[in-house]
Image (cartoon, rainbow, N blue to C red):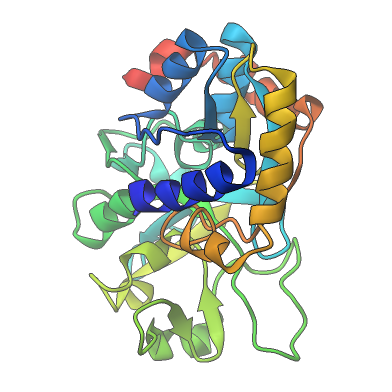
Length: 296
């Protein structure tokens, strides 16, 4: 999906700019950063906030856009536990087995690490699951006691007030038994509510994922993931690409590329500034994470 979605975008950008793009899917965020720093004048990458901060620190990678998902230009980390677990607070995670997507994941690893540090909690054994869906799967299958993944608010039925910061992040209890996969397999629905957090990625493999896993808590808001350019990318070409991306985001093909909910799920994009990622820099400083840590 990532490769095919990338190819759709590459073709659209080629038609708009006449430039040719090679789509690459590195094995980790660290590998993406290393590639961008090694080719500073001809690379652009989709990297999360943490990856961007470290890449900017390492070689001056520069942000251009941030994701917008269903109107939100921030997202959150969530902690998932079995629905029947006796885990009720962060304190209860002490010594428990932790599944996370990738050590380079902002919401799946970096922010949770800071949350645990602040709470004085030290998890036990860890499992790097190879992605957000993998982290969800690990808890679903009983391979870990809890997982940390990304959280996006649910979409409520038309006519109901939108989810707001401070609302319960979970689907209402009375709807949980109704949760299941839509007829076309594209959505995880609970009544007329649509689930958009990481559990939705496991919907076809585990249609009862909502009945089995619940959200323990979520983090403070995190600046959304980025589209960033290598530090020496030619300004004139960058301007052409930025203009083409904004136009591409308004087309139906966007939903088959980075807008696909099984790809990156960007429903739109907005301009971003380096300063917006200062909160992540502060977390990096507190935890002491470096690029080398992303590969461990």
